[in-house]
Length: 209
Image (cartoon, rainbow, N blue to C red):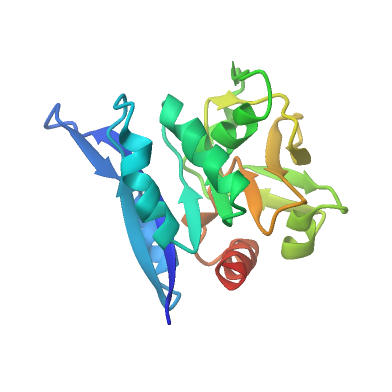
């Protein structure tokens, strides 16, 4: 039986139309298409207080969840991640998805990054140093890797395990070692489809779900 990965779809507004679209980036789908899995998009009507109850059944159908990048955090994002953490559903948070995970477990601090080094479409822009006692290190197999970066905000602290930092001390990865897979990354591994470390990460995620 095929495993199923659910992707939280975020609202995006196309340039030609002010009506929001539910979407995730194409490169995420392209990366996941390499695996023999089912992929489910989970659209959310933000601001609806009963929305979590409506999507919970869909979340339960999935073997693992990806919380991808975006620009705005909503209250339901915290409800989703809290539920995933409680039931130990393998969860990969990317960019905003990581920030949601981190903020859920601290005082909800998110600060602006002054350096433009962290917001570019270039493939590789800075190094990330990974702590050796982390699950992420076990997966990646290297202490220092080069990554892409396209975010303007950061979480400087969280009560989750802070396991990787950039050269200018921006928190780049968090995890909960007590869970099967509860990892958040500030960079975008899905955009590096040929990258050996991105493939190791997604391989492990797919295998563990």
